[in-house]
Length: 325
Image 1 (cartoon, rainbow, N blue to C red):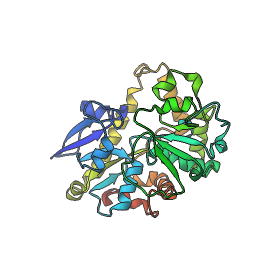
Image 2: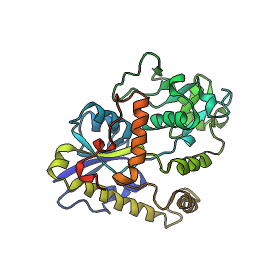
Image 3: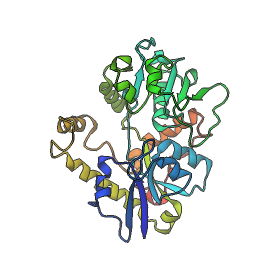
Image 4: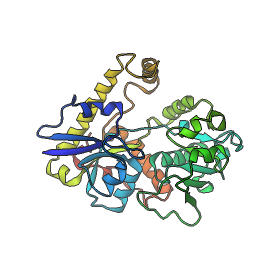
């Protein structure tokens, strides 16, 4: 059986691409390096190609969009596997214009905030975290999106959401005061060229991320691995086998950093040792039970933000064969 798997090019996926991690028995795996908003070796737009076009047998996609898709279709032809290749804390991913009068999170109330899209997982997480941890209601802000939504949602007439023009640079918009804040996994190139034009919401974002981890107990999920339902039903051992393969690839990726000059980062080994002290030996844990609290919180955020009509059990996201993991 030959199966395609669409992945980003993270260090934990290097073993998939170079063939140093064995696939499940009886499976020939074809790994495809596909980006989302930027093209990689095998293309781009990974998430819509997974969820809309059903182009790949297995793939890594937006956690938020998958939660929305499951809510809309009880017979969705994709099922989740509880391994999560991308994670982010939200506090360190919020940037502000230094002249916008934003000294602390509560000052974001009523502000114009840029996001990748309203339903992008980091956007949903940050909106939910700001509301839960800082009392900033997302309903009281206006949201300015770089891209359209993969799955449409009726947010109501009382919510201000707009898409910026294709020729606009959201980083420039932040620095020129057209928006007051930006939620993004990294600064835009235009921002890096003008570091005086923006700052992070928190002066010490790592300290805030650590505070978040100690309060909530998890490193928040961004992406989930999914598989075509017909394949999982025909070979119910495969979802767990893919999770095991991902775990073995991740273990190999950790071993890369045994060479303290493996990465371009001068102090990468030191950073990994500090991470282990704070987050434990593996904050990227796979399995349903270990991630259930995170999953349930995010489903709640999705409902609060009107992306799904009702909260539903976390079990609905996954193939039945992995629920005991």
